[in-house]
Image (cartoon, rainbow, N blue to C red; front, side, top):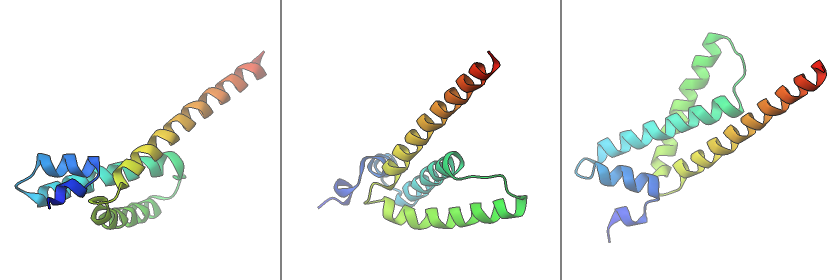
Length: 108
């Protein structure tokens, strides 16, 4: 049985692109999951915090993404983060448009 056959599409494409070297594939998957996690965090949960607290939060986020990378090889972690990022992007766009329309209505 080929291990790659049980992977989800994002992990499968990353690992097959770097097939002889699985460590490189794992590192790339980690960076993808970390990047998507940062986007989801910034769009959905981030608040203005002091610099030291922000650094601590991102360090914990990096540690959590290490755990998610182990799970992300055979579970749809990256795919779930992509869906979450898309939903939050759509929400932010609609929120921005609603606030803009509200300001225009208040001005007239």
